[in-house]
Image (spheres, rainbow, N blue to C red):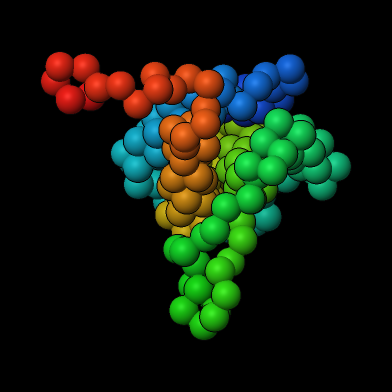
Length: 173
């Protein structure tokens, strides 16, 4: 239930992100992504009850709508260099990733899970949770920590208005 609650918060935030500025977005997302990772990592193990195809709620148009909103917010800060990709071993050049795409990939999996979960059919809820958990382990969990690193950089990089001009307090922070 806690995982579903955080997932609802994440998806709802991305769906209603219009008018937000980078400092607010990075602040909110760094917090919610950290919580989402924690809740996903402590999910109980489940077994797949029906090996049939799960219903997909997020269409390509829906995906593009969320992604476009994020690109418009992050602008030139949307791109970051990715180092935790299997392809990186064979690449002589850096691999570019996008904050907007990673956030939307996470959104897509969570929204598909939530759509089935909200229907309340126990067997389907179990299988949706199983698939979401497996995808966390193999796909979007890594995307989450990668994009969290990028968001951290955007949030705390020099030149942000929120900085305190580099002054340290008596404790050194």
